[in-house]
Length: 279
Ligand code: ARG
Image (cartoon, rainbow, N blue to C red; front, side):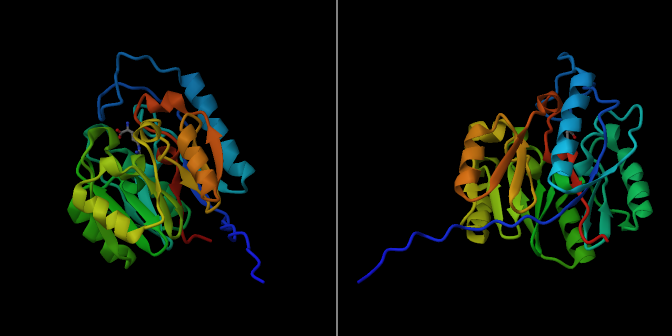
């Protein structure tokens, strides 16, 4: 007699993470670096601080470590710590920002990382850190088209000794890779295909046949600007459809409110730089 067995549930395992974050002490929208920014729309800095503190608490509640980068007056986008560097195996590729407004942030990151014992490398080409570099297991995905120079992809490959796959971004609303692709674990991503060129869509489908595809509405809600520890996926509360899809795929969505920061074109992942390979 054949007994029908239920399909085994996918077991998702969390790994403790180590992050760098910077409080939005000097947060404001004064220039237009991406289509989300409108200096005519006022920002509520206290609200931004409250929401950002909620994100820190969410990480700490999940058992992750958070290092704080001291905020600097006159650098209103510094809260978006993901852009300041990319750290893999205890080595950092420092950032070199596209816009002059953000360039001084890179040195602040380099100083903190050096203090933390990271071997910091000065970049030659323009790259906006984890805004455009996503580490998926032993592979690095790299965005280009709006900010990070393609030559920086080769620079990262040489420094980290990991294969770097270049992906072409085509929609200005999704100007950084981390606005349209989220790393869920060492082999799984979630993404919004419409943000990528046809060729890059094919590459991602080949590499990640089990990827979670987000709707345009969830992508516009910054749902893919998410941070996963392999099991818990911290994402904006407004991305409800994606949260349901993640749950169906065996992940645990952890919704947080971060809308005040969306006024500058960023959310969860933008605020979070991961330190990989540090003791
Ligand atoms: N206003 C910032 C900029 O345009 C937002 C950066 C968001 N960061 C990110 N990792 N996507 O540079």
